[in-house]
Image 1 (cartoon, rainbow, N blue to C red):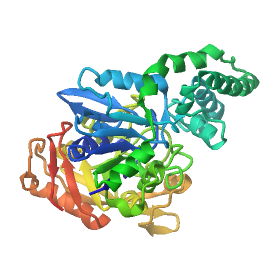
Image 2 (cartoon, helix red, strand yellow; image 1 turned 180 degrees about the vertical axis):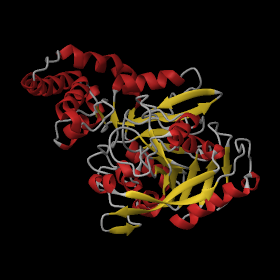
Image 3 (tube, rainbow, N blue to C red; image 1 turned 180 degrees about the horizontal axis):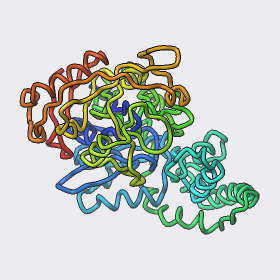
Length: 424
């Protein structure tokens, strides 16, 4: 099993972190391939809650190596804070390596992110304001600053100074105050000495592990519906979330891939701006939000909640190439007598079961629901698939029949042990 990929099949926040943490028991290497501190993986370990943004979820596994790839964007101090947050739990020395080609998020990126959102007014995208978009924009514009430049302080100073001069001109033109050099350079230097020992050629490392037959688990960020190309543009993230980008980022052959586990909640959520056809702005949505603790792990913002959208899910499975599904938060639905799932959309031109990744299209559709029976009992202590109530298994079977792929993992609670594994 050289390479397995875990990806999100919705608008992020699907519970990938927990399942990655679980599956990393078997992995020699766990690697993060894209994104930054705009997304968070929540993990319960040793009875404590941890939220990671770029550190791979396998960091708690003492026998595995963690890699952070060149497709990520890194907030230097944020990374150090993440690692220091787990230092009392585990010894990660010699077990985590970061690509020198990963780009740094600097203070002027966060500042620009904020100003851009202000300028958009009512059309704002609802970004996390963590500087992700401006950092990726600099990368594409070939003015970004890689972590590898931390090795040469003189060149680092020169690059930041040059970029800051240009940024400040646009800030002043907008009517905002310019940033000082120290505001940008200071936090980078504060983190520099702790980051330097972690830098390495992670792509060559990943390729070598695969050649040696080691098990490499690639950990995706956010979800397919937020992908820069396949998501609901412009309400998307600034990087690719699909599994194929994970292989490309680390320079791995598609032939090394054994399977892709797509992760989906048992219902639908979204945070920030953008359409969600099955949103429930009512008591149902509030029950789901409170039971599922649906508040952003990066921002704390309440997420929009609603019924599971199978039209969107089937699209995400097709785009991602997922071969199996991990279904999370099934226990949140324990209290409902009836559970709706969206099986089609009503559009001005008729009914369709085709998902179109266009924000205007999705804003105009009305969901067509199939009503399923709820199970009305606590499933949080179920250990095996056969322990689940019959109606819960019927719910899962309906999802499998509609999407065409089997459910191999079922999460019935926040703890890693509250996960049912099925031999598929």
